Length: 58
Image 1 (cartoon, rainbow, N blue to C red):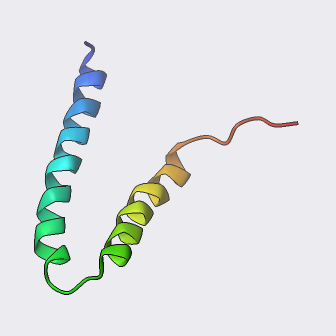
Image 2 (cartoon, rainbow, N blue to C red; image 1 turned 45 degrees about the vertical axis):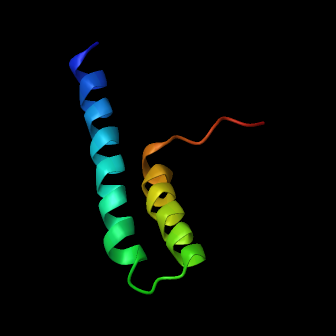
């Protein structure tokens, strides 16, 4: 694997690890499950808007 691939894999591992900590700390202290799911989706989707190019459509 190239160093870039290893770095991306490490980013995914760290994101998953931090996710479990956030769910335990924030999710167990009064945040409704639907709101927590919406926040997780938003935090994942917003950066994608800036880093993924739009497809070329006619």
